Amino acid sequence: MATIRERKTSNGETRYQAQVRLKGFPLQTATFNRKTDAKRWAQQTEAAIQEGRHFKTSEAKRRTLAELIDRYIREVLPTKPKSMNGQGRQLLWWKQELGFRSLADITPSLLAEARDKLHHGRQPATVVRYMAALSHAFTTAVNEWEWLEDNPLRKVRKPKEPRGRVRFLSDDERDKLLAACKASSCKQLYPIVVLALSTGMRQGEIMGLTWADVDFKRGYLTLHDTKNGERRSVPLVGHAKEVIINLAKARRIDTPLVFYSKRKPSSPLFVRIPWAEALKKAEIENFKFHDLRHTTASYLAMNGASLAEIADILGHKTLSMVKRYAHLSEQHTSKVLESMNKGIFRQRDE
Image 1: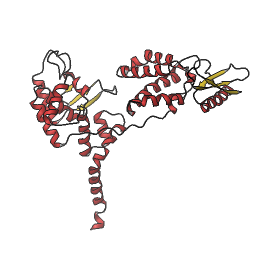
Image 2: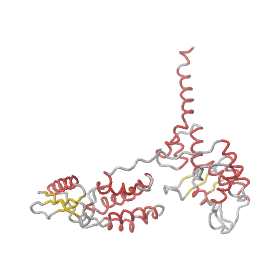
Image 3: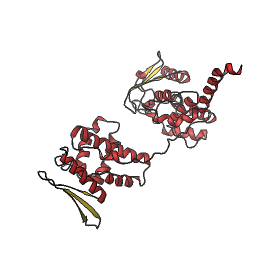
Image 4: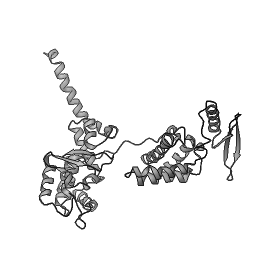
């Protein structure tokens, strides 16, 4: 039998305590902010006990969210070195917000309230990342630790993210920027920007490039440390190959890096200052280094590359990240359809 009791907290807020009593089973209790959530929990818990699938008394009632997060940070995050700092910070926010509650008391409505609190002062994409970090921790607790029956965050709606930014260089901007980079006192800046435009590589991938990763014979670069953690090969062709060959002729023997710091050759070049100076000289505004990657993708789309081909070149696992460039291939699509129509209706016209 289930009962719902209304209670007042020390600060005057109303809470609803649900109790489930069934003969032969321990008393089950949970507290909620809304009465409807308390009723729903009581009904689900009573049904689960009767069907023999309720084990919240053993783990979910005994464990807190703080325990779950601490264990996840200790055991799982070290296996994700690229995400460790960011996700660790995000999980600590959830711990501070709801860590004192037992896992049995963590409901979708409670998580939704926390999501809305997160939304104040943060972009939707940031909120989604916070939710994703906690969601994976919940999933691990369900599948591997058996602390929960289900991931409660699965039922919480994610905020809608705006369409990804697409800022790419016009032909005039590209010429001005390349001229400014070539005239820069930083002689490595021009090859870096050429490589970025030619391949769509991320800044970190370029700055971490070593000569061992350059295969001049096959015309490929091998990237070991990528964002998604998978090794991939990038074609080295055209002018980009020429500038890398020229760099190789004068390469330093005291560093394996292609682009290195003059003060400390064993460290990658810090390109922020010369990059900003080149943008200023070229009179280009609202443009970041990462936008060179968008420029590559945009040029590919306008030259007839499919979304699958763009995703493969940029190293994306899915097409979702490259759909932002779809509109740029409309002209190419129109030409393809025009060519097809001429072919299939040629006899009719004759």
